[in-house]
Amino acid sequence: MKIGIGCDHAGYEGPPPLYKPSIIEYLQKKGYEVIDYGTFGPESVDYPDYAKALCEGLIKGEIERGILICGTGIGVSMSANRFPGIRATVCTTPLMAQLARTHNNSNVLCLGRRILTIEQCYEIIDIWLNTPFSGEERHQRRLEKLDKLGEFKC
Image 1 (spheres, rainbow, N blue to C red):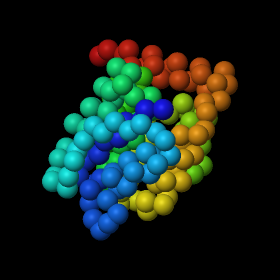
Image 2: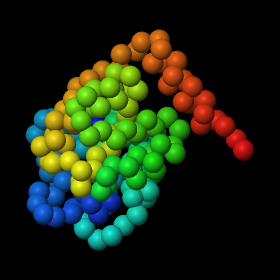
Image 3: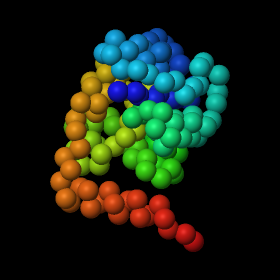
Image 4: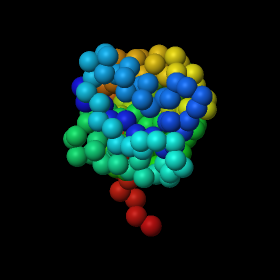
């Protein structure tokens, strides 16, 4: 599976471990191919730029799922969910990761560097990557309604 990763400067925020490089290494050791959509250092940047890059990669089929990191996960989630077909979820517990996949077919996981330890991130990532979408009619129906919301014009 190809996984995209992107972050703002929080992905490189100290103290060590630096989250984005650590998560990339963790995923690669598990056999995932990782595409890095930036940023690449601790200089202050705007999270919407990196959420956009990753979401465009997902929409184009360059990756199958994405992981975004900012201070809380909230900013990158808000940015990513502006794109059609993106179902970005902030997860802070293993149960949230499981339900984000089984109920919501989440395709972008948003993590908070200032909220979670690196070990918590690894646990959430593992659950999120290994949990399938249930495909239950009620969940599929709700996802189809979400897609139609994206068609709304003022």
